[in-house]
Length: 185
Image (cartoon, rainbow, N blue to C red):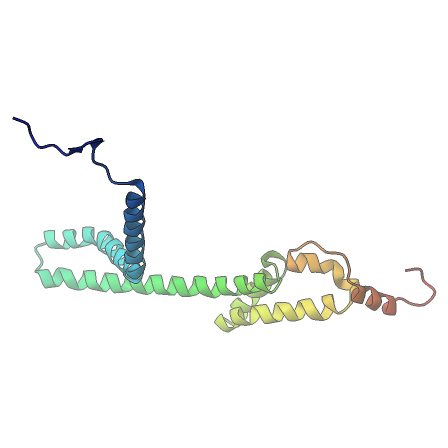
C-alpha cells in the first residue's frame, strides 16, 4: 500500500522564487502601510502607557491605605494632568529655544557667534517675544555693520559659522571705493 505523498515527479513541491518574493514584498508593503496609518495613534498610546506605569506605584500605595476606589483615582488623575501640563510647558520652552536656532542656521547665523547671546539676552529681557525677535536682530546686526562695511568682513565667519570664501568682485569694488587714493591696495 502506497501512501499519497506531496512529491511530484521531480521531487518535493516548492513555490517558485518569484512568487515567494512577490508575496513577501506584498506583505511588507501592507505591513508598512498599516504602521503608517496608525502612526498618529502610536505616540499618544505610548505616552499614556508611560504615564500609567509611572503613576501605578502611587495608586498601589493609596489602595493599601484602604481608601475607596474613587479616592485613589482622583489624585492619580490630578497627577496625570499635572504631569501632562509640565510636559507641555517643557515642550513649549524647548520649541521656543530650538526654532530660532534652526531658523538662524538656515539664514546663515551660527549659534555660538551671533544668535545664542542675542537669544539669551532678548529672552531674559523681553520674554518669549524676545526669542522670536532674536533672529531678525541678529541678522540686522550682521548686515548693517558687518556686511555693509568691507572692514568688518572679518566677523562674517564668526557670525555665520562658515569659513570665509573668496571675496566677490562686488566686495572688492566696495573696498576700493573706501580706500583713500594714493594708498596701495
